[in-house]
Image (cartoon, rainbow, N blue to C red; front, side, top):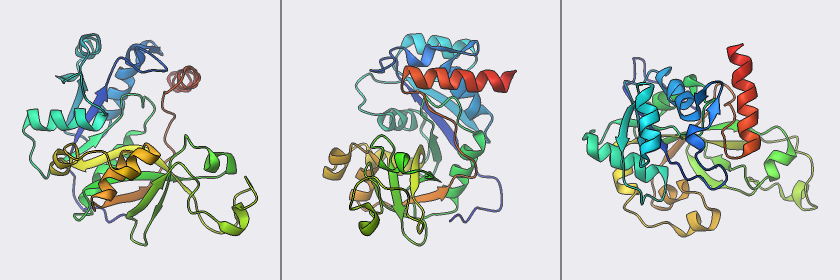
Length: 263
């Protein structure tokens, strides 16, 4: 699915981070293997080929912690609806050109493989007609496919996104009509990995658009881009991404994973 450029790709990483997560308040500062969660995210970004890594936050506690371990911090407004809006403010404040490739690494992804950050930036660079690039990974079981918390996607023959949904797509009519069956033998189902690369100019337009009807129905921000006719290229992740942290159970899972890696 990918036409990677031959030489190095210049890109930035912005890590949006907020303190007031509903399910895990203060999540960025929760300890994992002796470091705050946000430090692990920053370290994954620093292990990529990015030429600049910025933590974007509106919270002084997060900013102070990040500066304490050497991160570049951008203080942003507190009224942003999403991480994309926070990233867009950083782009404008830093004066990055419209063609700058910016990877949005969510601030709750302490186990994101750096190779995927690099893959994503190279994929966007190799597809000049795309405004956005993102990643997918094969689904191997029916429970994941039918889980509304797992976002699924379908692409065209060239790897451009046709749709994202919390429902199982594509819907195999004959196999699925009776309920939650096993996976059909034919066809590949893909789950979306919430890592994005943008062209900076696109993101400036994106945050000025009102939420689209499809976006509101599915609660998926990327559908706003498709609604306005923008192209999103999708590549298959070369490795399986590590778990993100949304819940207390996720936090314990990541703590165990990173403890094993550092042992």
